[in-house]
Length: 158
Image 1 (tube, rainbow, N blue to C red):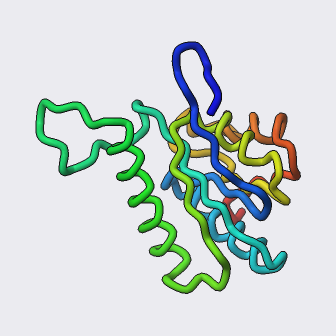
Image 2 (image 1 turned 120 degrees about the horizontal axis):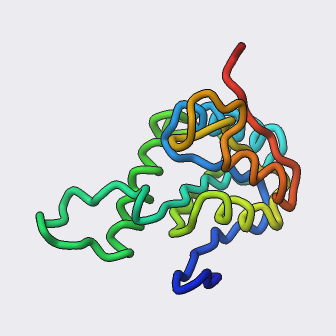
Image 3 (image 1 turned 90 degrees about the horizontal axis):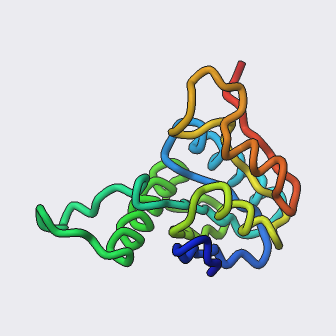
């Protein structure tokens, strides 16, 4: 974990393999499919990283109204949702070992940290935030500039 200001950020434990950032956007789901194919071709593990913050995490549905979920409850729910998303889009037997990492961290920092020992980082051209007219989203831009491994930016079919 790293400390930024008063916040402690989690890191994905990624010793090798292909890393993909997923936030549920159409762009990240295209990146997920491309990353799964890269992991299959390379014969390595696919690490699906869902970085989240309190602003971007969905509220766990079993938390009573008026109560504030704990960070663990948020993390568990985000992890569960991400695993379901992976199964929905890659199938129950994707032909590659998959590890899901739900980490409490801003997306760029979480993905860049996960790239340290990875063979490849795969991201969509833009995610949920930002402006629709941008050619490259801020997370993809940060990853291209600062990742510690090669980066594949997956664009929509043109």
